Length: 240
Length: 228
Image 1: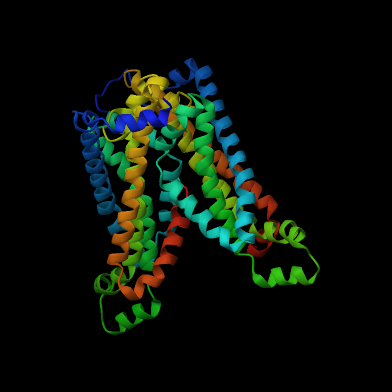
Image 2: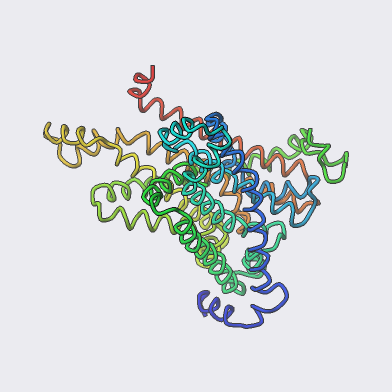
């Protein structure tokens, strides 16, 4: 049997799905870790990004954050954080993944506010809106396409990176691949490929679903700007 | 330094230790060399494949949509999954690591090189055509030089992310400095080993990025003159 056939056989074994530590367990872990990491990333990055964009300062800092995190290996954070006060277990994994969610969220929140039409901003000021009101009622709604695009990039990246949590026994679908490598390639090849299919499939699925969400939350008049936003997002976070 | 943050304040297990670096300089240098070698090879191979692809997408508009879409979809696939797909066929070793990281670098370079080529102003292209340049002459003497900033951005992004990505190669036992990080974690959480691997990784990325930025400055003197 070649590895692909082995993978099909492995995926067709119901016990591989329902056993403790089987696919369903791992999927649940994967999704909950990822969701927490993205949530944490949003809670940190959005307020900071929106505020920096509103004041127009800190563009350099935003760029610096994304450049520095690009150079830090995920494996390093995953191994270092459990040895700090976070301790072993889920919190350390979630924080490690959240760190990599921050750059796209931050860059997009910042760009989203910065690109708001200056005339709309002037008009709002002329109507007597204070700084906070301007941010809440004008800049924030105009930044929604960017926030959504950043959310999608960050979420897909976290779901992809969460597979690496298996290096430190952090759970998730990556464990299936790691367990396969733990066997011999000849014996575990099918399981390795099956795990790869699951991880890749989940990432592509999340990407697709969030693309629909992104479209749904973008008001119709702003949809034309969406393509441009996406392009700028990929420029800002390319290689992440 | 971060000793106060440590999980157990174990005086025998500091994050930074010269003692460790001195005693294990052979292992560390071997890991660093392997890491740099893998990164250099991967980026070189990726660039050699990516540039012709970008030029093809630039010349034939109908190709650029599919190439970019394919690159985007491939980029969504997690690195561990890619290792999983390739390892059963390429085996456990450097070839697998090289293929995976080169593939990701390729996607980054194609995207940026194409963006750079598309930024060549149409007037310039027309002027070159009017001066009698053929398709190839125009490409090598006009369009590629003008696209250099975009290409170099792609190369730099690809290099930095490749340095980080090579560490995932521990899954097949060839992760360069990642090997150090992972071994430290498994060796009863030997913090100095983990930290040394991490710091060298970030430094390697930084040095390679600065080298490429320097090369870029040398290759595009006209940009410097304009800035001055």
